[in-house]
Image (cartoon, rainbow, N blue to C red; front, side, top):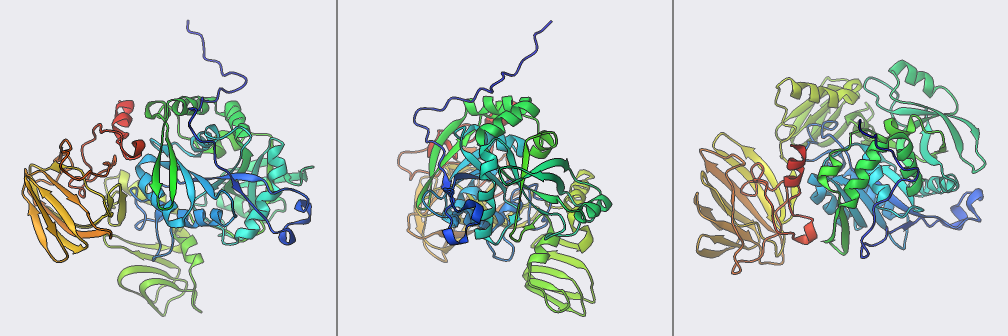
Length: 570
């Protein structure tokens, strides 16, 4: 008979390496004249913002895909949701301006680019595979000092009034310091869409005020039916749950130990064996942590609401006073877009005639909506969505259902720019015997040295200067010049200039599979390559390169971790 494992009364936190930097903190500085009276005599608390970058890629389909989930989508050129979230947190003020992002490892380059674009210093916690918000918050808590106050903010919330948001967060500091998990919510009948089909929000019922100035949460109602949600929205003391939390790191660890000890144990083991390093991002150096894949995959997938909030007793609520929108589907995007007198909103090259309450997203070509009402129309290069507004929250379920029944909806397609360690790629067209795509190479960067057995590569330089190694030859091409790489010939592409290099690539051959890539050892005579990512494209474009071990470059940020991930899944 085996002895069951027992959780210690005080959870064991993983030891930190001596040179690992302490969690950087963000001071939320308020102007005294704008601060609520209850806070006039308090010192603004140092808070570490935690951005959870999750998403299936189905909610804003066809613009979002699994290779570019919702937080990283740009709607008609506007900043992505994660960039807006980072910029909002950066507006909280000096001195640190540092944010902790929890993001799946496969999306790390997009997260790094978002930090760079937003001009925010930050840290990245790279999940080997998404395991839900409970595990994400466990990682954030375990990587922070026990007394650090963590502000957990999903990347899909649109909160335009930053100053009001700062005030609201400060009102929850006292409750968070007392050991409560503070939820920031909105009166259920205010702001956001009215409950309808597919509404996935939860609601928090509150009771008497607490001595710390917050409200005591008496019950959490997860994802009620549409009729029950409407009743809740008409009651006083009921608040829409947004997934915004303020709590100390130790409070989160203790709550997980009480309600989800298995999740905590798996995360503790993963963090104890985690890899750490730094990678440059513009003016800042980003510190990253990669939890151990095998241990992390032992963690079950569950949301923090299901794992902790549903049963936790010490829950407090601080009402949000500013405006907000949960950008969880196209209906929310339409609501944020300026509308005409008929309630129609258009982005890009869309046109409406004799229509009412119709949203058109058409960034690439003209799209006409004629005589329509209450429709959402989203046009992309390879797919089109036409949906009734009321059904927009059900899109993710519909896409998943169709995919599961064998329908090909292009959820894994890469018709957008995807980040790579050497730059980016953008798939333009894919046929039976050819693939066309655009490539961008950062100044000084190089692609890995490799070759293909069954296809050739054809390149046209659109912008910049390209240094191309093809077998024993090295040639320099400028704009409007071209070359080709025969099948079986080793090659590498390098940007020796100070500006970005852009090329048009055509892959041709009878077999274009991802496994037709042979990675070659580096030659000292060649310019060093940027480290190959786990999801490096074959021919740095089409599909995925074979997963393999590689020397740790960029302190391990770009070195393959998916090999370990696959072995852990076996």
